[in-house]
Every structure is written in C-alpha cells, then in structure tokens.
Length: 388
Image 1 (cartoon, rainbow, N blue to C red):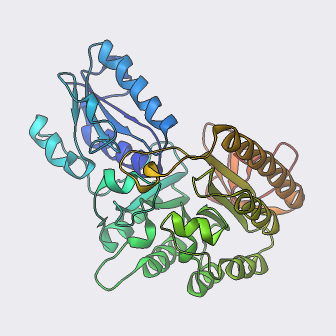
Image 2: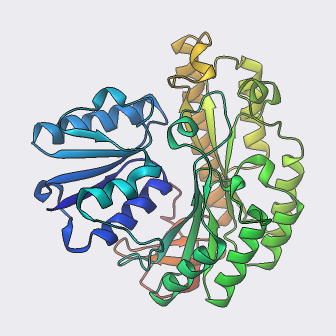
C-alpha cells in the first residue's frame, strides 16, 4: 500500500506532513499519482484556503484515490466531503487511525528534515481561545503540549543532521505548558539548547500579549532570530475587543525596546481587513500604527466568514469597502517592505543558506542571493535581496 502526503496552510500542518512522510518509510509515495491513499493535512482559515482544499479533494477523488482528510476542517467546515472515497479524521485521532489502517506509525520526534538547513519544531497543537473570526480552534480541538525534553531531543537530533535554524511553531505558542513551565520557559530552554548546538531559534508567530520584558531579555541573551511575526489583526483596541482579542496594551513600548536592541529587528504582521466592526477610523489607525513601527511586511487577509464563529453572525461590510481597504494595505505593505530593505542595504546579518534555492535567509527575514555555505554566516544585504 502506497500512501502520499500533502498539506495546505500553516507550519503545524507542514510539520505533521514531514512526520508522517518519515514514519511511512517505504510505504510513502513521493508522487501522489503513485499513491493508493492520500493523507491530506487541510487548511480552512479563510474561504480561499477552503476552496483550495476542495479543489484538491475533487481532483484526486475523481482520479480514484482514497483520501484521508485531517488537519483543519474535519469537525465543521468540510464535513460534507465525507463519503466512500473521503474519510475525515480529526488531527488528534490520526495516529490511532493510521495504526488501525495498516499498523502505520510516525515518530514522536522527527530526527531530520532531508536536505534542509531549517527545521520546524511543533511544540503544541490546538487552542482554547475563541477569537471571533477563527474556526481553527474549533477544528483542531483543545491544547496538547509536547513535553519539553522531547522538544529538546528533537533539536539535538536536527543539529546532528546539519539543521542550523529551528522554527518553533504551534497553533498558539502562548498556550504551551509542561508542568509549571510556560511559553517563556520554553523559549529560554530551547534557546539555551540551540546556543549549545550552534543553532538559532525563530518563533513562527506570536500574539501581542506574548511580547513582554522577559521575552525581550531572552532576545538580548540568546540566538533568537531578530524577527517577530505578530498575529496583530488590528491596531484598534475597539475592534480587537469585538474580535474577543486582548487590547494591545504596552506592545508599542515593547517593540520600541526591541528596535533599541537591534535597529534591524523586523516585525511582520497578520491583519484582517474589513472585519464587520471595523470603521474607517479603525482602519486608518492600523495603517498608521504599522507605519510608525516600520513593519517590514504585512500579510493582508480580507475578512472571510467562517462557519460557527461569532463573526459569521455579524453584518458584513460592503465588499467594495473591504476590497478598497485591502488594496490600500497591500500598497502600504509594499512601501514598508521596500523601505526596510533599503534601510538594511550595506549591513551584514547572520543567515542560513537555503539549499536548492541559491539564497540565504537572514535573522531578520530577508532573502539574499548567496553562494552555498554551512551553518550560520554573516552575509551582506545587497541588490536583489527581498522579503516574501
């Protein structure tokens, strides 16, 4: 029996896809056309993402493949796809399902990422928060944290196989727990381990309330990449309240501290444009806030109605308003991105070489043309450097 693996969406899905590709061993089909069964780690964070998953399922179901659909979407969004050729398996039940299917198993620790210089380390899955727009917490279930020792072992094994950067990822990093240890203890322990292994650590995505004095102290001591991707969504506390999100409080002060630590520190953000409660003033406040703190990239998400969320019961803004605001924010993102790269030209930043791409990735998330090298090396920011 040959089993293919495919994923959409976040780094958590990518990690799980890699874990199962390793676990299946000789039963893994690298080409989906050769597979009898396809395990699909799906994403339904937006309507666009959902549509992409549905097209994939339609294509391979028509080709006669059996599909095991997991990841996000199994509890609410994609339940209508279940049928003779499509089996929906909640992510927390996948290991047991695969064992029953053919005594298949995946390692609890990923020993390597083939031909990579960067590896993702999933530290937790699931979320207990109930942000007004988000269906992922409903789809992925409650919080499931990995033990700290297991995480540290994974980092050591990656180091032995040439991984130079580990990306700490999860559905909500702030919710990780191991006994009395919280996410800040996790970051410190992982960073200490990485320093001993001559590696660096990157945080995949953080919530504004995660950025506090202790985190800043960790950045000043350990080899943490000088980049934070912040799940901001809006800079208006009024809108955040209607999203069931915490106010920004002292985030501005914390970002200023990080810029003082390193003027090349990069901030990127996710922003939802056109949330039903967002006024023009709220939108302009967000635009101004991103400019003031010189964000290097903005990931713009026009509001997308997700089933069973509080926002799905709100009256949406006119589509023309949402489209206009998204266009304006995308333009601002391009301006900020170009400005940040110009500010960094001529400087040198520690980077890892991305194999098979002819590029190095700096600690502040700039892609730089480069010749191959091993480990972490300072590279100049030159013409042709860019941010994705």
